Image (cartoon, rainbow, N blue to C red):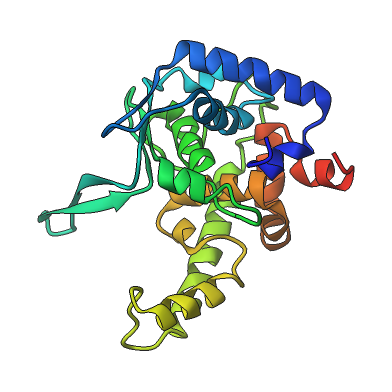
Length: 260
């Protein structure tokens, strides 16, 4: 697919396997539009291809907990809730580009944001992000430690997973804090010059700053980078990159060097 240049790294065998997985996913899981959005065959295949890339060398059973894929035309509102340390419940509405719902829920996507991230040079991928969350939920609530498949993974794979990812997460949070210290005191993300400055500062980081939100987001953002823009991740956090290589049983950098 021309819209997904990172898929061009796959060889003929992997491309054929990806096609099979796409057909199986679309056969097993309903994919529909919301708010009047019409899902064409092309859109369905494009979304399925990105979702199946994560499990190309694994097992589609990692998506058994997925009930459906729902596509909105644009960002959608979700009611969020948080209980603070004092026990006070805070609720607010948030506009999202994607969401993976726990406990047998759906993956919900904004087509505007999916399409926006298919442009040449894009380094983010909301589809990979949300399906990484869905894999992470295979052990319960998403926490950045995905389930290990005994038949496919080395038993020791997850032994030091928490230590590697925790160290990288803490370091990344510190980098984001340092970056934010360089922002003006009256920083406003809706102001064009401030948004441009933030983008420039964030570009120096190995991952999108959103990865600092919590360990589950760090895993999802790292998974995005691993498949779409692996070089900064491999340079900034080589141990994380190696863990993801072992987990997904793929090495995008090697594919790129081979010119595939």
